[in-house]
Image (cartoon, rainbow over all chains, first blue to last red; front, top):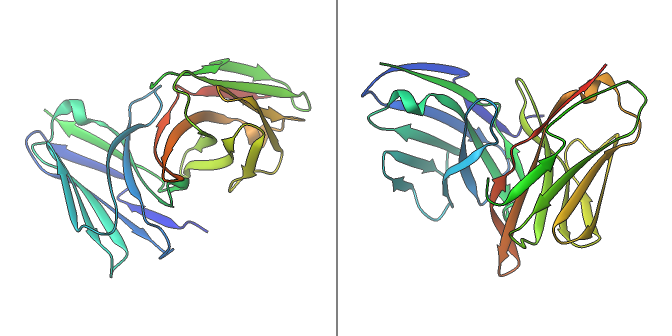
Length: 111
Length: 115
């Protein structure tokens, strides 16, 4: 069964808009929640990560919001740019090992 | 790609043949991982290593074996390739703090086609 459910499968956003991708997890033992960005033909690249002791983490235009009680976390991309067009994956793990990935979201930012 | 190389980058092989994929790192990280990526499934862990000669199974380990004889190299072997193993394979590495692994960094991937 899929332990991390990611939505939506695809997303189209206008340049300058906010992109929001959501993930829900089942295993309450997870304590590390990264987001990865992947361009075609490349390996996933770590974008930002959060641990459950904080509810939000921001790095530049990227923000993770974390809701421990709901077992949900989301990625917000502010001022989305065409260069942000990529596939985004959420993931979760206990102790950083054995990452469990969501199915991915294909983001297209229209200029 | 964080000092990670994978070889070969592309391979086409026939059903029933053995295949070995290699991951090489120059970061001296303790942990190494093999994932496969398929549409609709994201990435799924096949096997991982937490040190030389120390390996463990992941979510989709059936049909795969691994070996790690040196810190820098992690090999993934398909003993008898099947069409269901057609996929893109990624190696990842991570270091540890206080015995805990975080921040996995991925290699460029190997596209394997089994005909």
